[in-house]
Length: 114
Image 1 (cartoon, rainbow, N blue to C red):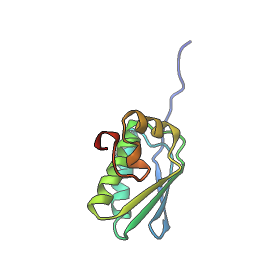
Image 2: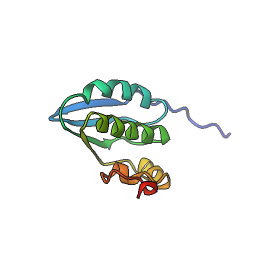
Image 3: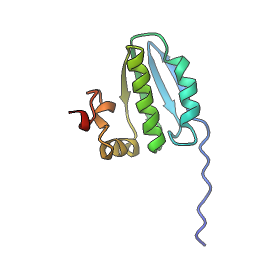
Image 4: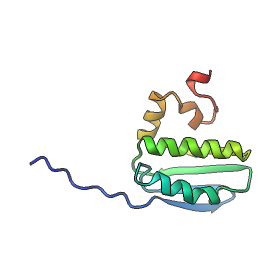
């Protein structure tokens, strides 16, 4: 039998730790990214620096990477700095093959822009 168990990714959670620091819990994927973007938009307003800890993100896909890039865009638009801690390996690998890993690690430029 080739049946795979059904996976359900409940909503990812965003926890504010104060002083622009946040923790994300749950998968960053196509099932969770849009809702998390909506919830984070208001939470990220104000302040000049954001730090997002992804240590409690067990998995991610291209939608998770797209979410992180959108967070970067919003931070730039709001003249904020943003730092990602503990990026899940799946997302880091996608960033490498997409040549956007430098955006996530703080250099601000993709390989194509260098």
